[in-house]
Structure formats: C-alpha cells, structure tokens
Image 1 (tube, rainbow, N blue to C red):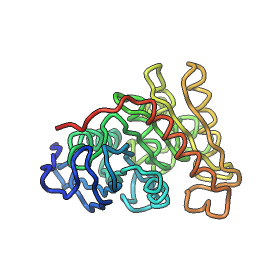
Image 2: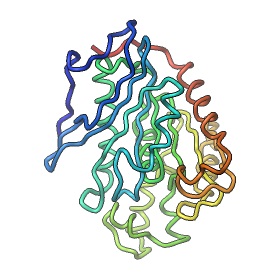
Image 3: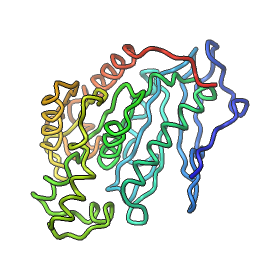
Image 4: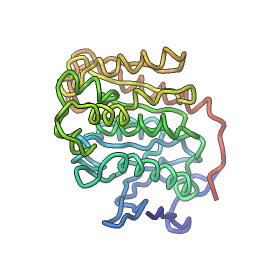
Length: 282
C-alpha cells in the first residue's frame, strides 16, 4: 500500500492567506494498491483559505458505484456553502472484503491532510459524509479512528448489520462484503456484529448527523433511530434529520422537503466553527 503526496507546485492554487480561483481536479490518485490506483475528484473554493473540507464516500452496496455516482446532489450544496470536497473511489466487494474499503477511507483522510497545502484546506476542519454503503464506511471510520474529525454525516446507512439480517436475512451484498453465507449461524452473526458501526460507539466518538428518509425500503429508517439511541446512552452528540416520505437515495428527494440541505450546511458550519483552525500541513 502506498499513499501519494502531490507536490505543492503541481496545482495553481494560492497558498494560505492568498486569494485563489475555484478549481476542480479529476481522477487524482490518492493511494496505490497491488491491483491498481485509487482516485478521487476534488473541488476547492475560490477566495482566501484555508478552507474547511469534506470527504465524500459513495454508496452502491459496497459492490458498485464510484466517486461521481449517487453523491452528486451533495456537490452544489457543499460548493455553495464554501466547502472544499473530495469524493473518493474505494475498493469494492466481492473482490475486496471488509475492512479493506474502510482502510481506503482512512488512507483518503491521511492523503487529504498530507496535501492540505496543495488544496488550500484546513486539516483541522475536516468532516466525513457517506451515503448508504458509504455511510456505513464513514461511520465505521469515524468511530474506530476518529482523531481530528469534526463530524460524520451518514445518509441512510446500515449501522447494525446484525439486527438488519435478523429482519430481512443476510443480503447478497453483505455476504460479498464479509465473505459469509446466508446462514444465520453463530460465526456469521459474529461477523455481522463485528462489522457494524452500532457496536463501535464509544465516548471518543465525534459528533454525528444522521439523515434518513422515512420510506426507505432498502435500509430501514429505524437503523438511524437505533443508532441515535446508542449515542444517547453515552450522552454523545448525535442528531437525526428525518426526510418525511423519503426513499433510499437523496436524488429521489427532489420533490420532498429540501431543508435537509440547509440543515446539513448549518450543522457542518457549527462543527467547523468549534474546531481550532490549523495551518495546512507543509
């Protein structure tokens, strides 16, 4: 495994304290694996920095999708609010099993911090956003390796794979992710539990914002309700924004209450404001 640093002179982005123009960067390699490169797309706002930043992780049942699928509705929301964003690819099942995709998210975090000068961002003001399977991954990383994250925002994420399987069975996607069968035997139940963010909540957890539609037929709304209760047992910060009538996927919410966008931006702003600003890593 190799994490790549990008030379500062490669990008035409001004250094800290200077004014720069908004810039997009496509297919930037953030890590190398034995079977290929992992890439991301990035957006950096104009104006003086360093800017707050968000790493975005797509869904797709851990087995499909990429940095431009499913998460595109987030891009203009974050851009209009003045955030830099980094949307990543990660290794997919069944070829790559858990926790390999989560390790990719961790490496993306390290890469963004390592290249904070090149992208004119503040490494101390960094949050994670993920949707569906990507929400599972950002929740896992945020709970097991939370250092320096100001917040985590999972959209309609499966947080408890064990209770989900008890209700609907072990889905093919989860079987592929964990390398298990559909049998609810003791070994598989343990594997489901060990890969569930729900059981990783500790007092070290960063603030969470859960966003979920009440009519989600793929990941039950109660997955977010029970996750919030788990946080509250430990008196930890965890907000839940309910999209009434919302199904699975933010792209299907266009005719529903759009206030989730404003709520997301305000929630991020409050978390970023409370973080001590730090100069980019040089």
